[in-house]
Length: 266
Image 1 (spheres, rainbow, N blue to C red):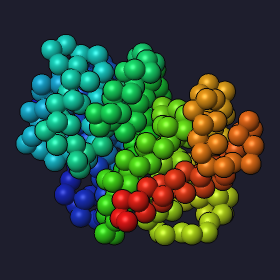
Image 2 (image 1 turned 90 degrees about the horizontal axis):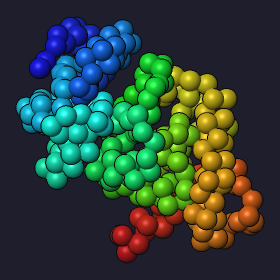
Image 3 (image 1 turned 135 degrees about the vertical axis):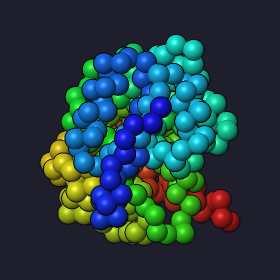
């Protein structure tokens, strides 16, 4: 079921308002999300659905930039929707944020496998949701680079190295790495280049970006130490028993991705 869209004048003025579909069987939760997104000025909720079947029907006939997807719904849940939409190649131009009440690693892994980009755990603030949406919708339209391929490499290596996918730091690293690859930055300063870029893109501060990245690396070091250690050893890190800095970690992920890209073209 569609709801009223923003004016064509807003879009014509170059505000790049993103078209959003909210999928949630909770009437109160859905209404609250719709109201907050409409007030943000950056997002236009053009459709809403109460289960995966309704969402699938809408996705087949409308262009959607972002889907906010609740996991637990009747008839067809979020994972069922993701799996079917992924199999039908309906998510190639659409981003998905999964909304979940349960922090289950297996569920998160399945959601990411079938096309989700973020997992946001309930309860969350609307400010958090808006910030994650802004991270997700930073566009990279110009360039002949195959970003879908690059994105899969980024996700793979961030995950393989143990970085928790539900954290802000994970998304900041992902955005920063995409930026470096797009701009072909062989040399960069994480404090003078990366933090300000991510902060501007996500409408936050460089200090918050730094803190979120460090927090994610710390979580990987404390809770996924074996995976992080294995990654550090494979990259010949100076001391795999110690936590790398944000700059060191990002540089190693970039090196790993470039190795993959080189092999795929050799």
